[in-house]
Length: 249
Image (tube, rainbow, N blue to C red; front, side, top):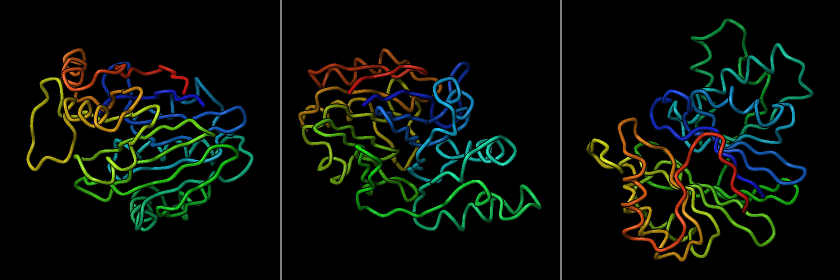
């Protein structure tokens, strides 16, 4: 199983980067986790979007889903084989329909290209890859994702503060893909609904994670300082996320 980072910026894409987007690949399956600003363009460097088996959106903040609009146009007017399975949080279909009504007179807008389904916390199987969403704590309904293939495991934090559900799903995983929007000198906005780099490190250490990958950086964050803050609390390998980086799990 491979993880490719399609974007690592939070809120808005920095020059030469995109917002949240993570491609999970096995030999026969391609699954996209989140589709923020700029993700769809970079995705096409890695894989034909016709070859995607599913898209999961962790929560309905634009830096995690807004490029569904670009993908919809590509599938609507391009040569695509079938509607794409897109899994979204509870109530998100109504939200997307309301959004689309202001974008286009062509309705239904998203569902001409996507098979939209609101997910729950059960396991979803795609060949040898299993994805299990779990609720985390953010300013809106947000879900982390536990992704497994045989005996390999990855947990994506989504946007969250420290919470029990994240801790419970992190135990002994191979890779922790963690947001750290409050690390590296980022401004601290109240209430706190994101992770500090130091907290990502603490979680990785206490849960016996084998490898920590930091992502979702604030624009002004010093990424090497993020590494140091995490390393102060975690003795394992730390990878600073950057667009195009592929990690074998």
